[in-house]
Length: 318
Image (cartoon, rainbow, N blue to C red; front, side):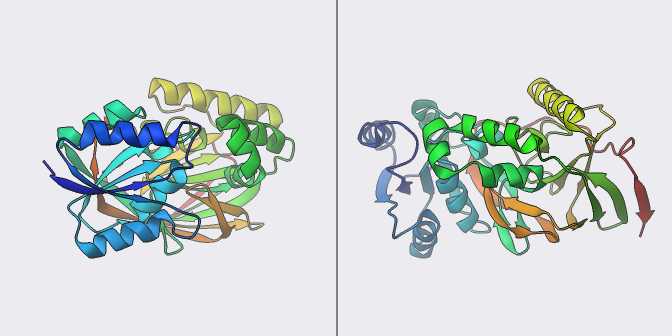
């Protein structure tokens, strides 16, 4: 059980009252953990605060904020072996949901006080740290079209509306996926490479129930030929993700690999952990056991691969 921690708190995250939130966190934790509380500011981001805390030799770091704050701190802590506690206060809370961490303040604090940690994977995408996923094509276009004002005002609905609008411009592209042992060529409208992702990240949910500590990346390829099949594929992914079952649609493929190189024709935009970073090609590699997280429990293993049925599919062994 830890006795002290640096708490990195984002006062502008979510729609709640930050003064009430910090007082509740202090009430729940300070009887057992001495907290060094540091607030993020527009001038000093969460990643910098995390790196400074690591340099000071802190016993643990606790982050409280939305997805951007949580991901920034987690990315800064890759390979540090310092345990990370998460008190998610954003709209989607993707990383917390993916790991099964409660997204209400009291149970999140109880998870930290319980002291149970688990080592989970991270990854790099074009040498940038990645804790959630890299989305190519439809996912990236949706992220770009969900503007900041809409996200602040509408939360998850902003992404849904942006996705609906993007469906009108749906176009297939050729994709080549190179793993350690083979090269796969097919057509797609979206390719997602996930370290881990919550069920709400439906374009990552080909296998469903992504495993966050297996040393592998989960790839989902959506190859819908038209608007109606794209809607049907999205609906299927939503339902199978909720049920924890792998999809069986012919226009959705999935597989696992330790590292991948992905090229597309034409080049496609890439969203990394919710931020646009450029266009393809990308190289993604898993970093096994990169983070130590306070977490309530693990995940059950899910099916590893289904590629048959994808259009123009070619698989070449290396």
